[in-house]
Amino acid sequence: MGQTVTDVGLEKVENKRELKKHAATIHCSNTLSLLQRKVTNALLFHAYKELMLKEEHEITVKQLCRLIGYNGNNHAVIKDALKGLISTVIEWNLIDDKTGNENWTASSILASVSLEGPLCYFAYSPRMKQLLHSPSMFGKIDLVIQSRFRSSYGLALYENCIRYRGLPNTKWFDMELFKKLMGVPAGKYDIFRDFKKRVLDKAVDEVNTYSDLIISCEYQKEGRKVLRVRFSLKDRARKTRLGQPRAQLDGTQDSLFAKLNTIFELSVEQVEQVMSEYDAQFISDKIAVIEESKAFKEGRVENLPGYLLSALKNNYQAKKPKATIVNLQDARQEHEIKDWVQQIEQVRQQFVQEREKAIQETIANLTIVEKANFMAEFYKQNEMAINTVLKLQRNKYNQETVVESPQVKALLRQFAMRELDNLELQSLEEFIARQDESTRDSWQKLKSFDPEHAVLRLE
Image (cartoon, rainbow, N blue to C red; front, side, top):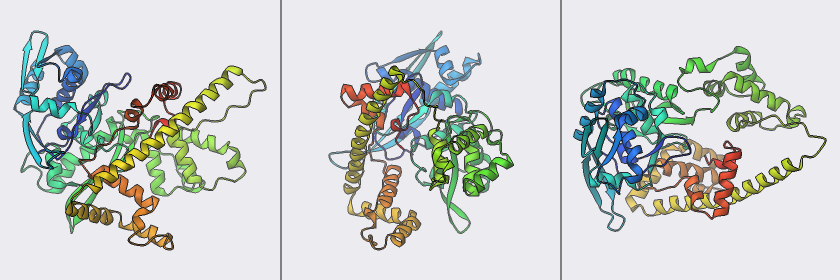
């Protein structure tokens, strides 16, 4: 029922109610209702700091309702949801680092719960606490975003995608397993077109409407039968509003479409993607920034489509006219910002090196059979890209050495991060937290001054 995973936990990020949820509790098969999923995440968020210190935790019913975005007064439904969590069992497999043996464990989500007046007391089993507490593999779930979802299928899909944020797509899920992960009861929607119409399409639409991700489905088929599914992932543009149907967000205008396609040389598919992710006014503003740039006016932009996509992604701003009088305070601040950026860039390079080392070590530690299967699947999924590298750089790489090319290395890195459940990677922000006080200080100052600065993110 559960998947082979490592461990996870939780953190608060500034004012965000953000939960780091263990991959096993995300990638597990169950038939939790929407309310039960929300309650599960809210209780863990509330209890995490004292998870290993207290046998029993408490929260007011009003607090719980606020965390899940429930505005009703019928607390009986909350009670029913809590009862369901006691009877829902999660199974998971962990690999023992010393012996290499696979250990099977099972536990109910909640061990006990009690409602006494306005207070709710709840407890986790010792095994569940161990699973939930250690942060190494996780999916970050924003409780504000989860409160917007209207179906358990939509929230289940969001949870199963969010772990892969920062990658171009999720891993491939076998259809039978994926139906279980979505909480579809056995024997229901056995015909794929029914599953797609009743579950998958609606869940994808909810994720694209209510969450901070934009996703789309890809299928692997054998004849007409769909065997596996995965999802391409993109962060929603920060300038678009959540909670509106995508049709309202697109704001497609013929003139803008034509300009993107002809002047900025985007393909039709790229134009459609851009206009589905960004507000029309936001796109027009970035076009204006580019058209006012000196390089554009002088015809020196070699990659116009890439320039526009970068302007959209990084929110380019028009350059301010140079002041005739130098403002010493502004000059001093600009110098400080450069120092912050330079210091963080150095740490980013160390972070990338450590991440590469962790990926290489994880692949090297696979058994001979596991590694052979892993590489065979990698070559199969990336055959077209690898053949392109071999064709364009045939004097530099051959079939045996092509994996050393930067392009193929990047593909292998993404594939490993997506497919290896025992790969333990930390985020850039977690890596920064381990650095000296000066580096942490530069990070926080730059984050406060310009939270959207590119150096703070790592795709």
